[in-house]
Image 1 (tube, rainbow, N blue to C red):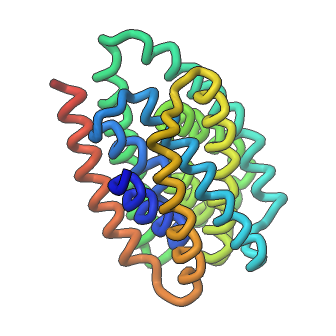
Image 2: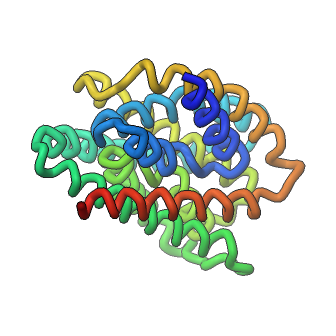
Amino acid sequence: MLEYLLLGFFIAFAIGLTGVGAGTLTAPVLILLGLNPAQAVGSALSFSTLVKFPGFLFHALYKNVEYRLLMFMCLGGLPGVLLGSSLLSRLSQADKLKNLIMFIIGITVILSVILNLLATLMKKRLDLTKYFYLVPIVCFFIGLEVGFTSAGAGALGMVLLLYFTKLPPSKAVGVDIGFGLACSLTGSLVHLLQGHTQPHVFLPMSLGGLLGIWLGTYLTRRINPKPLRVGISMLLLLVAFNLIKRGLS
């Protein structure tokens, strides 16, 4: 239980400070700790929902959320989550496909990390604001990824916001957490109904996560999140390569 408590604190702290880390880090680590892919994704989405909710409230109080933009993103993202969750449920029933699912999750995490690092380290934003109308379509594929792997809502959502909008970093994190909350809530309900969620895993993680999300959100305006985001990305790459190795074995 202690390892899940500490794991929850670390991941939630990263979420509050950077908007990245919930599904992208949680599900791969849970798989490496012994859960099958469907259980790991279901538990990760439930954890994401519980820790992102207070984080979203904090950002709402700080007026860091653009609600019209959030609804526009959810228009495409939520149907994608439903489709991805259903797809994982069907594939996870076949034992031969479990290694394939781990491989896909590993590849997904690596792609998310690369895109997020590019967005973090680039000195000048890539301006795609003239293509803003494509946001729901991009969010559909992000949601599809979230439902299938639990990864992407934070990392890819942040990249989308940095490229397709001109939001300042603090508001981008707030909208990103709101989008991640909507996606994880939708996916967690689907996986809960399918029996994939493991309460003995996500409940202690959530206890540690409540403190972590508060601390990370509180520090958002006081420290530069870039070094932590880079450090998290390096850890994610290590975890992803382990998943790919297991998927190929």
